[in-house]
Image (cartoon, rainbow, N blue to C red; front, side, top):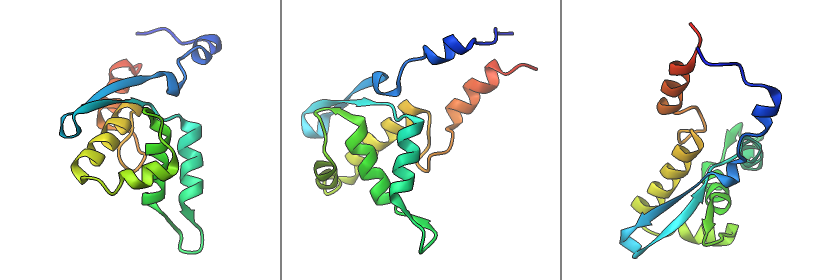
Length: 125
């Protein structure tokens, strides 16, 4: 059984922005650096993408925000992320998938199977 983390240990965990991964994009002849999505940013993006009148979430806006925030090299603006969505879907989906994986999330913001499996391994029985 693993030890219970102290508050200091929890707060000393790395910030999402510091969890990065370089991904190769052979279709475009280079690579990019992605970072994990923080919970605070995920909630902000969901609020920004919410349409209360229709009781739905604009996933396009959510994903534009995700790309703009989580592509760190090169630095990405919202407008550039919108333009990126006009590129080959396979590459864009790959980038989003890598961001979700790096953050421990699936496409709709729920916990990934891998994250669940890791949690189950460390769960006290």
